[in-house]
Image (cartoon, rainbow, N blue to C red; front, top):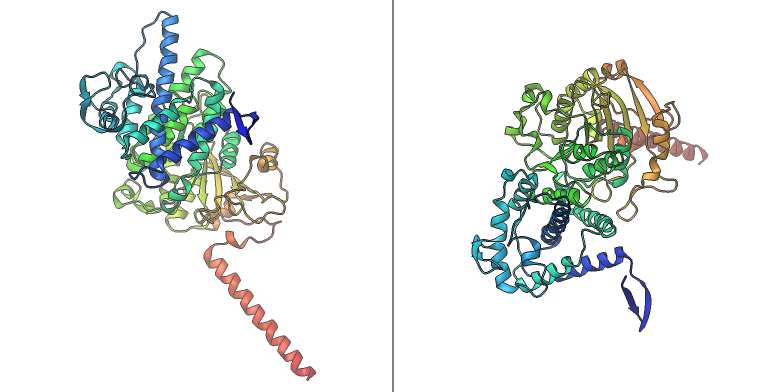
Length: 518
């Protein structure tokens, strides 16, 4: 382990995390010098595709060695001279314009001296015709990737930095996964303007744990983003693996997602690969592009975990895929209908009902019209057993929109809805970027989850009462203080007006009293 120099003396040995953090920081410092890159939205995908190829080559070499020991033939996903070891591993290898040409050009002179397709052109042409699904993953990833660096010399410096990472070391791999997730969080600033918000890891883990996916069940996130829900589901399910068959089932038949934007798609693939999923099944199209009526039992899944975009708007062509009386431009409501449709009607392989955990904005709870019709179906056709009301500022500082998590399943119609109001930690008024929500804060809710009774945070409402109220699910804690940020706009306006009128009455009373004394 390396030792850091400080004031001319040896300091404490650098940890793996410190070394990798320093390495990635220096790589990003190099990228800032290149005039072709504009901010982290250019730097992050560049670093990601370079890491992707290094990781893939390390994995391929490991698999090749294992195949040799077993006396089996190995089929590489990427062939020479396009493997990392062929063009990137030598720190004194191709650089400058020669490196840029090899990566960017449709046809070029390759590192071995032969003429052929450039690196990106080759990667985009891959297909799974040899039975390796990773080829399709690679091709799809690189269809949405461009190299915007103008200096091949700076690019070589970055490649050399990434080359120092050993993706076959479990210690470095685990640490790099954590560092990579910290990089993903930096995307929040750019994502927030389109209604997409990075879901705090504490919320994701809570949703996965109480939904409790079991090995053999299929798990979907139709709005995958950078893959947070799928990574946590994979980690949760991996602990249940006992046999080779279990491993195969988890790797190839369990996890799937959908992400239409090229940068989050690339990041999602890399995130899942780093955490151990060899060939992530992420659809690069819009999950809402299919007609709802054409989704049958074969297309349905056992578990859905997601935080779909809210506040965004979908075009008329997408809206046309939904029933005429439930068409809306509001993305969150379209996704809610899709999720309801995508849950299997039959019990899962674990003999449990198909189920979903979905983050929704507060407007979904009190909305009427199309929104009310969707909620009526949710209450009558599904068991909406729990609504967890998240505290204010969970997505701070990117949005102040109040949010909730809906938990529902296919066990039958709703009889009553349990509400749980997740409180802010004592002494806190909000969350911040530097002080986000922590998983420990959900301990009370998780303890309550299996032994439910009404208390200061939990209460239940009969479904007949909710249906009679035009499916307004925005119910306040009968034992809690009024949270004005959770009030619907009309009620909030009425409350403010009533208070203003009351203040005016008090002022008149005070004025009369003062006049009487005079």
